Length: 324
Image (cartoon, rainbow, N blue to C red; front, side, top):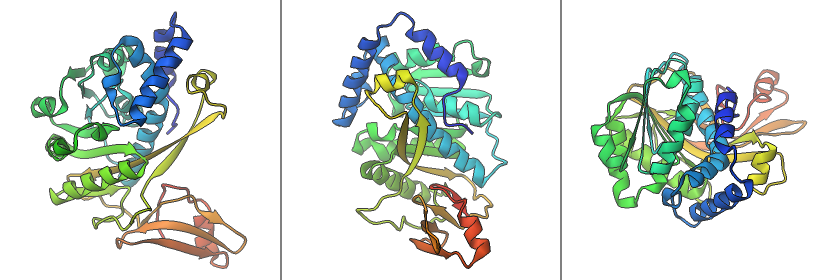
C-alpha cells in the first residue's frame, strides 16, 4: 500500500488550512516540535490552529509508519480482516486513516485521546467520509476511557505509549490487551528510547499470553543489545508546503519507527527472519542483518555463487519478512 496520505485526507487538510496564515502554522509547528523533542507531549497543543499545525507536520510521517506496520501484519496473515478498530491516543486520527485504507473490512471505528483540540480536528477531517459513519471519539484519560471502551478486533496505539508516565504504562498495556479481540499494534519512534518501550511492551504482552507476529519471527527475548536497537524506516515524499512547514530542503523524509504487533492466537507463517537493516550488495555477496526464528540476530552473507539464494536476497529490503 502507498505510504502517502490518501487524496481525500489531503483534500480535507487543505480545506481546513484555507484562510490560515502559513507563517503562523509554521511557527506553531516548530514550537510543538521543540516541545516533543524536549520530552513534552501533546499538552502543547491547546488550540484549533495548534492541532492543525501538528496534523500538517506529523500526519504524513505517522501515516507512513503505521501503514508499513499494517502491511507487515498483512504479510504474515493475509486473511486478517478486522471489523472493528480501537485507536488509543488517536490524536488527529492518523492511525485510523491508515487502518481504514489498509483494512477495507473495517466498519466500526473508535478513537480516544485526552486532547480536545486534536479530537476536534480528527472529527473535522473524518466528516463527510463514508467509511467513518460508525465513528466514536471519546475525549479523556486513556486509562479511564479504556476501562469503558468496547473490545475491538484491531487495537492500535501509535506514538502514544511514550506520553504515558512510566508508573502508568504497564496498566495501559494491560488495558489495551484486555480490549484486543485479535491483534494489538504498538508503534513508537525509532529511537533507542522508543525501542526500549517497545521491548518492555512486548515482554509484558508475551507474559500475558500474546503471540508476537511482527516484526519478530520468534517469541524469545529480543537478541539485540545496546547500543544496537530494532527500528525501521519509511520514506515519504514531501510536498512543497510540507517542506516549507518543516524548514526542509530535501524532497523526502525518512520516518524511523519501532513497533510490535501481537495477536490472541499464533499465526501460521513461513517467515524465518526479518531484515533489520538495508542489505549491502557487492559483486561477490549480499550482506544483511537478520533477526531469525531461532531467536538470534546476526549478519548473514549470501554468496553470489548460490544463484537461487542470491537472486532472492537481491529483492530484500529493510523491514522485509524473509524465508531462507
